[in-house]
Length: 195
Image (cartoon, rainbow, N blue to C red; front, side):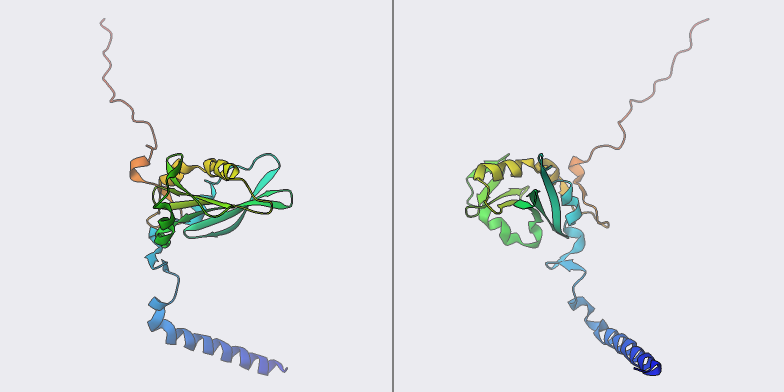
């Protein structure tokens, strides 16, 4: 293909993209990007905040994060080349029906409602908002093993998460924040020694 023809096609393509962008500008509110499940992005906890709350892998195991997005994080618990379990945390504010399975739950783990989902999955509902899930893979995991993994998550820190107002990092809820520096008692004037 001749060089002038390639330049003409490139310019035509660029002009077409610019025109398409201008035509779709009035419909920008219909396009994705500013919301997650019809909620403002600022109301949904970012998945990166969940990553530090996953359980530490045991000897010979490794945790491989496979998916992360606003409101969700997932990792595989691997031992060698085999995947033992899928571990996930999701912010149910994006899918409130995910909380329905916990309504009839009579079992609790560390005080949080526990739901068994078939033979290979166990889930907790933390702070009536965050679903923590363990799904056995391969040969599977017994319910006790799944529960041990659920207890390995930092559930109290998860319960304290709140979405960041403007950043991508989640922060602790105001009632759970620790002071940056310890409060010092008011300084009392020292008396000068008598002469």
